[in-house]
Length: 203
Image (cartoon, rainbow, N blue to C red; front, top):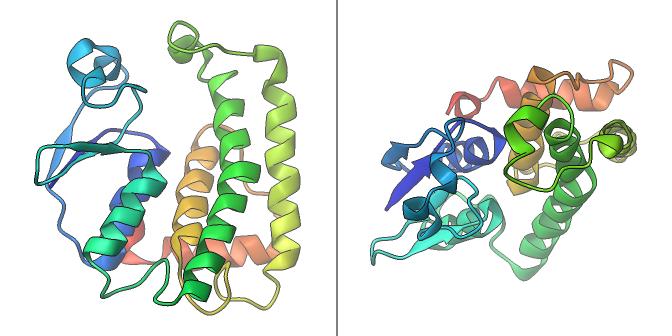
């Protein structure tokens, strides 16, 4: 396997997930700032043009970070980050979906339509007029999640899951592009510090 890697929160999710599972993934870095991921060679591997994508041992390419992490979980089940039972897997997927849909997508598009507009305006349809609203929705949902994780070590309870990795990587990105953590969200702040202290956070 080989991870086609780049800057950004999406590749960070896969790297951190792999690190938590103890998987040593060979990597090939591409320059998305220069638009390498929008060129025919890369689009033949991943037609969405997104990064990262995972080259499998059989030569196929797998994209979309949740799918990549699910694949790694199935190939290397010994440190479960999704689950070992139907109930655990459903719970982890439920939280991962909530994090992605309510927080990560709004945070990322808020960036793409504002601070990242110069980079994205010629690559995707952008809605600059929606940027501040999307950022506000992301912050509202982070506050919503803050209440739900009161008393928990991780989002799903006492076990680390894909949902934690997804949220940590996107919040870290958000902090770097003008979407800081709300200091009033004490539970999220404490959770974030615990996640940042994990060696995998540096992957």
